[in-house]
Length: 401
Image (cartoon, rainbow, N blue to C red; front, side):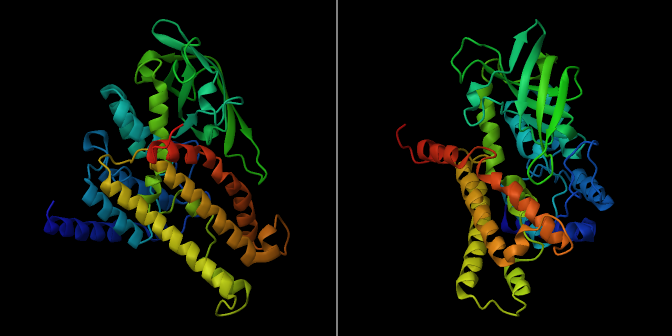
């Protein structure tokens, strides 16, 4: 694309966003106002659905997906321009969730034409919420040890077993699920990748209450659930390759890029005001007199900016919209950044960082205390930091096993 065409797209995009992005969608995300798809969990802000509708009509909830599946059909140059313009106005994401960030891109690579036409447009519109059926009580980081089985019943599988830490399962419409279809095969083989409705007979969900009082995670049980073979993604007993690719989409953080960094752990654990202003507020000062703290705040912000720019560069340089094993670098660096920022927040707030309830704490302090506790899992969720370092060593650096 020529420079003139790029500039024309930028100007048109800027004008459209200025006209169509509601003012309340240009502010930092408020808990409960996000849209993750489906109708089981509603946003508390009506503007969120107006923003979703307008962006979905453009295909910009999934900007790089092909137009025939509801996406925007943007090439890399235009995609990066759209990211710039979304970030310029600090636009909230019109749509979050595993449909956009995980199963959608995976369907594009592995799905049949019928599966793409059935699921992708619904994801783009936000009609369906998805959850992930990977981890089990005895198969966490060693995911390939999973025991949930799918017995061949002719034209369908009968699925029995359970999954744990299924984020958002209580509000999900569909699940993408790893199951064992060959118990005699090596543990990384004999695994298939199935898609099925959470409303299927035999599916039950039990929320897991966390330390912060919330229940975003669930344990999900399958009791002789019938799944048509047409809802198997890719080939039987070759689901492990699909599962690994899906995790690369998750770890890439591209969903947060496409939503002006308003998604994911980087956004959710942010204070309501920037760290520098937070420090001045708690010190009752117009400047940060602690030179060490000042340096650490600046360093933390620079690392965040470098992280976001590196993600964008990786997209621009990659042949695919999602890079390969390098996505583990994103996952690891993001976890380290989040942990560092949490420690800075706690230092700045002092004892006010640990308010659980009571009139001596503000609503924002109580909310951040709970988020801080939840975010301790960032170096475990989505693959532990140790797993990411192993992948980086083997797949990126080429070191021997």
